[in-house]
Image (cartoon, rainbow, N blue to C red; front, side):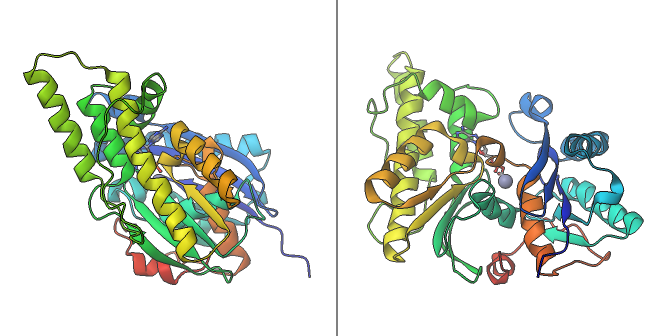
Amino acid sequence: MPSPPATILGLETSCDETAAAIVTDDGRVASNVVYSQHDLHGRYGGVVPELASRRHIETVEVVVLEAMQQAGITWSDLNAVAVTNGPGLAGALLVGVSLAKALSYALRIPLIDVNHLEGHLASAWIDDPDFPTPCVVLIVSGGHTHLYLVNPAGSYELIGHTLDDAAGEAFDKAAKMLSLGYPGGPALDRIGRKGDAGAIRFPRPYLKRGNLDFSFSGIKTALLYYLRDLDQAGQPKRVADIAASFQEAIVDVLVEKAFEAVRRFKVGAVAVVGGVSANSRLRTVLASRAASTGIRLSLPSLGYCTDNAAMIAAAGLKAYTQGRFTSWQLEATAESPHHRLATKRL
Ligand code: KG4
Ligand code: ZN
């Protein structure tokens, strides 16, 4: 039996990106519009929640209209609206959730709430719809470093996570220490390309075989002491070498853990998603490890790594085909416990 037509509007306003996207029946992304607030928060060195919410309010309408126009559709073409509802900044989430509820009510179409991490998980299948399960998915973003085992039936379980900082947070803090500007991760990636990754040996915490948890605060502290010692000795900083070496330590840990999970659970496929999966060194090392081990790798294209609404619409499409809708009573929730995610189905 053919599935009902589905044109899904996805909305994402959980942090500092205002995003809207249209995904259609077959999972095709018809548009993916992201307005980034980086210029607004740059001078503060991090996201200011109140400013983020206000900027979402100012831009969300234009972003949605742009997504509709790029997809060449009108309101009456929409079959459902999917919106990120946690984890994220409460005031920022409220903007997307309020608009989604209003559209759902006005257009009489189903409302679907999507956990932000579920959105990142779904991004593994946007470019590669046949990516197999069971598989391991590593989410590496500014707030999360989480390893999941995705089962063939679509359920997923958390099999490892960071005990302190997330990988993206470590990149951002290191970039701040090196005065590379904001956002730190992409800046560190860029300058690291010009450096020698073997110049300094930073620690690789928790790399014991079999352990699937992460810890990045030790690498960050090692960098802090390294920079302090240089200052005290009056020596110049070779920023590109420091960035490349720091990045290499994080990449080593992420790749080892992802492939350790693949070994432990005897699966043939691994996906790495979330903002840090845009990191050029991480992508290179993952691709060569996948090639040498014969493990299938899914890395979303760059537009689906950092926060975007295509991944929210893609997760929404799955919910839509399964008839999983939300009521208009939906409230924006900043916290989104993992047990909720773990019991959901992709
Ligand atoms: O998924 P995302 O856009 O937002 C969250 O859900 O947190 O991830 C943002 C994180 C930030 O920490 C940012 O510095 C990091 O992803 N990031 C990168 C790169 N691009 C984004 N980290 C390292 N290299 C990059 N190229
Ligand atoms: Zn994210």
